[in-house]
Structure formats: structure tokens, C-alpha cells
Length: 110
Image 1 (cartoon, one colour):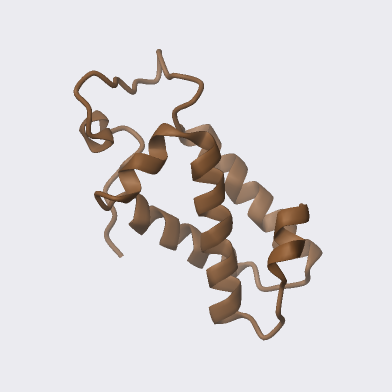
Image 2 (cartoon, one colour):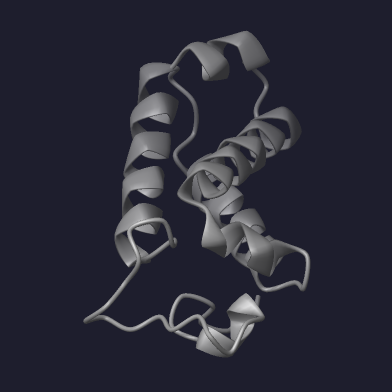
């Protein structure tokens, strides 16, 4: 799939006042490190549940595509919302591509 780089495109956040650069990133804005941490956490969860690691790649594809939409760009302003969106995408990917059911309570407790 084709997905543009939403992490380093200040115009994608919708406000000309918001500046995202590698030197001066607001601690509340989502950055590349947030994505890496969520990806790593997702792989740990998948490994712990003995699920296919490809499911994480599918979930990350979902989140990437969502964040490039007009509605998704708002999520980049809040790390908390970004985490929720990532967990939601992982949950959807597990539901669609795994034979094993993982409860929402399990994801919420972790």
C-alpha cells in the first residue's frame, strides 16, 4: 500500500502553528519513537499470546492508513489517543486474521 510520511509533515496536523521537527518535538505530539514503542509492545503481546507476528504488521498498516486520513491526523496531537488507536488496530487485526480469540479485557489489562 502507498502511505505518505505523516510523522514529518507538519501540514498533516492541520494547524500552521504546530511545528514538528526532529529538534523541537512537543512531548505530547506523536513522534517516531512513539510508533517504535507501540510496534515493539505489539510484538511482545503477540509473542506472549502465541499469535502470528504478521498480525502486528497488518495492524501497523491499519494505523498508518488511518493516520493519513483527515480524521486520523487529529490523533497525532495526543500520545494517549495514538496508543488507543494502535491497540484498536491491533485488536481488529487479531479479530480478522487470527484463529484465536483475544478478549478486549486482556488488551485493557496490559
